[in-house]
Image (cartoon, rainbow, N blue to C red; front, side, top):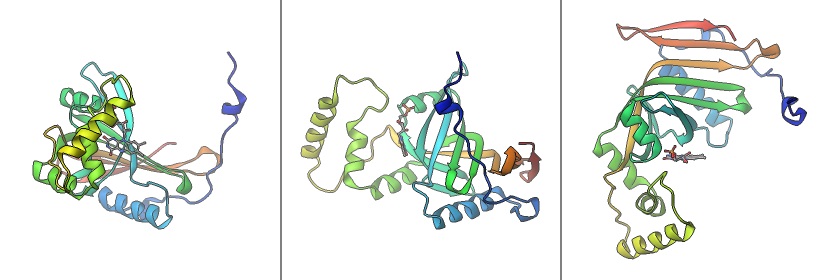
Length: 216
Ligand SMILES: Cc1cc2nc3c(=O)[nH]c(=O)nc-3n(C[C@H](O)[C@H](O)[C@H](O)COP(=O)(O)O)c2cc1C
């Protein structure tokens, strides 16, 4: 079968900027924050949306978008349902990869590392900061399970709103945060003629970071 030209002919040149070794921060989290600030300044739509890749114990991968909710010396934090597909995979295989793609800046950041749950206190603090609709939704949805139709969700939502008429909605035991502690972070800047700039930080046994330029 030939490639579909409507798809195959889509391509663009990346001309906005370059990335040089001399301008990199020595700590990749500082470099991440520098780029994230630039993404905010560029008013990107949902710059904190990232692809999260997980794999089950047989190595079968799966990926989806989640929202980054924190990035600090521990790593990259997001929140989800611990009993979702991703939650089950992470229980079997506590390693994950994250990808940010910011086309307006011609940038990609690829992260990999070990994953662990954040404390219940941290999950509760974030959960309680969410609008009531989102907190109720965490109770409404058995994330990733098959359901008969939308009416099932709407009925559950109605029952839960009746059960929690005020602002208070407790944190479900199966809902909370994860932190990806990076052992590798790559910054990618698109360049003309596919000669992109790629720099990868690798965590060393003594906790310092080795930086290497990668071939595009
Ligand atoms: C922009 C965007 C943001 C999302 N943010 C989250 C999130 O922060 N947490 C989450 O559990 N799901 C989020 N989702 C939904 C997930 O992509 C996914 O459908 C859900 O987590 C179930 O994934 P799973 O069945 O692979 O576990 C988001 C989806 C999109 C498109």
